[in-house]
Length: 243
Ligand code: UDP
Ligand code: MG
Image (cartoon, helix red, strand yellow):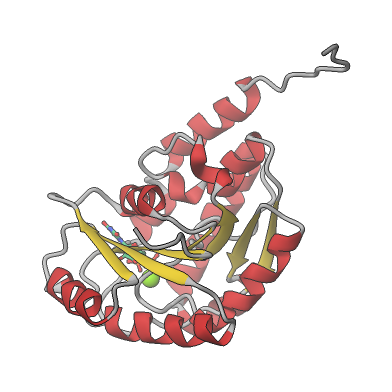
């Protein structure tokens, strides 16, 4: 097995054949500019288009492109989680496959890792650039509800452009829908989390997988579970130790 790379790009993929070549090309440009060693870990969430065939071609041309394919569609969280488990890098960078997350923002996400365990992208300042008003409004409401209920302050919990040290997720329990709560779950575990402002591009190709309904309401049960966990998890107040 080759040496572990410094960085793993972990990418969930559902019907993204029109995006994968450009995504890999532009991430490679940025990461090469930073003189990083890296790999791509793409989890094909049982796409119905030819994403898997495209991935095979990309991997044949560059062995740093790694892929795995689900036998059935399991959702974005599962695809992210499978990618994190397969990742070999010391730092994991998660991002969407559709180039809405801009590869050029990579340095902004990596820089604060000197002081923090996890850096989350926030699209709040750039929101109107790449989204319809309906998406902006539903995301704003979803964030406000999530933060109020879970006592969180993160401004854009739906953004999956994040960089974190691999220890952050080594012992984490992942569940369906939890990609929206990763910052909170990491804080519960005692990791430090910060946010940086990032761009928000329009989709390069293909279609969004979410409507207003699942953006706003589908995660409400998960939100209550996260609130419960936050309140009930032990925070062991050890004052002194002997030996
Ligand atoms: N995705 C996935 N499985 C799904 C739905 C989405 O792996 O069942 C991936 C998708 O390919 C993309 C990311 O999750 O890389 C975010 O999806 P999308 O761009 O549709 O979400 P939006 O930007 O509209 O919130
Ligand atoms: Mg998208």
